[in-house]
Picture 1 (cartoon, rainbow over the protein chains, first blue to last red):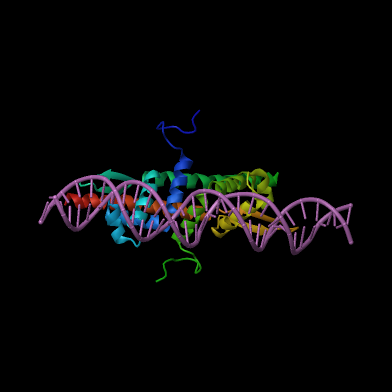
Picture 2: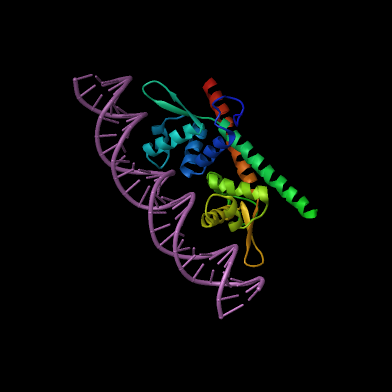
Amino acid sequence: MPPESGTPSAPGVEAVAEQVFVALADPSRRNILAALAAGGPATATDLANRLPITRQAIAKHLTLLSEAGLVTAEHGERRRVRFRLQSAPMQVAQQFLAAMARDWDTNLDALRNHLDS
Amino acid sequence: MPPESGTPSAPGVEAVAEQVFVALADPSRRNILAALAAGGPATATDLANRLPITRQAIAKHLTLLSEAGLVTAEHGERRRVRFRLQSAPMQVAQQFLAAMARDWDTNLDALRNHLDS
DNA sequence: TCCGATTGCAACCATATGGTTGCTTGGACT
DNA sequence: AGTCCAAGCAACCATATGGTTGCAATCGGA
């Protein structure tokens, strides 16, 4: 049986969560996401005007964010590519965190009960 | 005004969240945490028996996890050091994720309203 | 047609990261 | 005293990562 249900090509909850964690672990990436949240969809060069790093660095981060599903690239007129935020993977990661924390506390309780017996 | 309330030496929500993201971005670190969740508090050598990496690698990961607040080191008898899970930072990171996703959707709504006007 | 602006691609660089081997330290037990 | 086992420390290595510069391709407009 496949490890996941839903869309046939679903990468798995943990895989999505890992990509989100990797993405959010970097400050520059968080800055890019914050800029997109504040100013709406934008291109790489547009972001390069507001952030202290070069356009190419931003482009690399955007491909990583795109692979993580946190942004989607929409090709518009005049060869421009606008990137839009996508909150779905973050909610997956959030569920993953919640399940992990719950698992920890559950097993801690089980350990406590074991020590009582 | 200080950026945070609560304990005077509080590192800030984003800083805690970043450390959690960094910690959880690595599979070996997640394996260590899973082993601790499954078997209860354990030492580095104990974990090295269950995981496919060396004790020293695990020790490095444990110091990182300890700095992130995800585990606490308790020194016992005969120079043993046991590591115990700590779920509090994960809940902080979870709140951070939730706030971020909410912020994204809020600003997307604001953009939509702006386009309507 | 030429120019400016924008995207994509490639090479390169410095540092961080994950992991290993090897050695020392330090008890606890015989 | 000698031995065994666990922990700490240090050097080292390969690769990943974040960032840069430079260049080619492509489009719209003067």
